[in-house]
Length: 438
Image 1 (cartoon, rainbow, N blue to C red):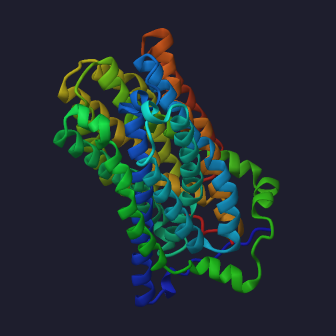
Image 2 (image 1 turned 180 degrees about the horizontal axis):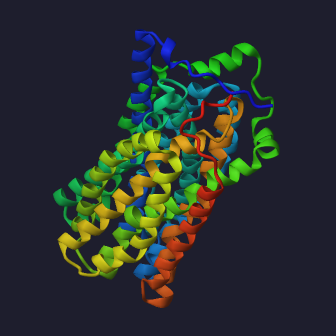
Image 3 (image 1 turned 135 degrees about the vertical axis):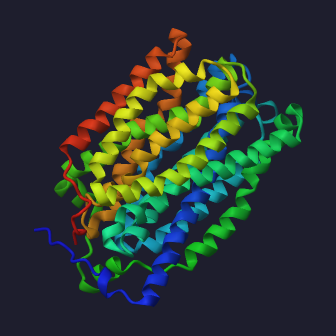
């Protein structure tokens, strides 16, 4: 039933190659802007939202509540995956990419205008959760389109590398967001940052969204979707087709993301809370460690994506999974030394391990599905796995620490989720050398 699409990279002319490069850049820029918005929220949730929106609770309990709103952004992602996954396979990748970047930026900017609990009362956290919900919907529809705009263009022998450019978004977005917040915290006193400084990185999204919309409008539709449209072979019900015909692949594509999401939550989100709340070290140290680790992550991701083109997606991904299991314990052993060097090393090593999983991930997930349902299938896998993995990870880690007052439970929780990823990899077929299915 499934036909394989022959590789056409040898017939691509020079102008088409230039177009491919522009599209790959637009893909990376778009996800960078998306993750800037997302990371600003995540960082503020870890640092001060407990006091701004949940001030009547113990600091760690307030942080747990702040991370609950973090989880809302993941829970709403499948709605975005369903809506935009359907639209992406019906109307095209380009249309969805324009809409998602606009929604993401506007909701983040509106967060910067919210009243705090002190002035707005219970309405304040309700509005925060509502905007977070809308933000998650946009991100749920963003990722697959950003990947496909790279994968469905360009050299089909380098899909791992091409798709990994989209994966730079979280690293670059985290770097920009953390750098922005770090700069503001250094320029302002703690009282000024708590009073109004936290709004600046959120409102800055208005500038970023304008740039993102301009970039997205400049890209063209992918040739694979154009060919599908011209042949009249588009799926009438993409979501239903994925569930009916590709259920096993959906489980595999989602399963490989579960553990990597939890590992990322430890390094990029929970580490902020652990360093500042448990170890009682300066906020600037935690932010600096994240920034340095993110630089290493950004360099390593395309290298790992390219490596997966040569030796396969599964070996690279599996190596990262096993190392992440070990680092679930190693991170806390190193961090508990409670000095600047050990904190930075714990985060950097964690980010490098993450790159082994994240580099080949985008290509691996999208390669599971044929062109006519690739957007829907990839979006569903991405968003549903996010609920099982990243959505409740910081909340679970904070809760385990609150109950047991030790990090051992956190480490075993991370190992358990990575086992899900390892099983999915063992059940999966290798896709690196296979042409994309039509």
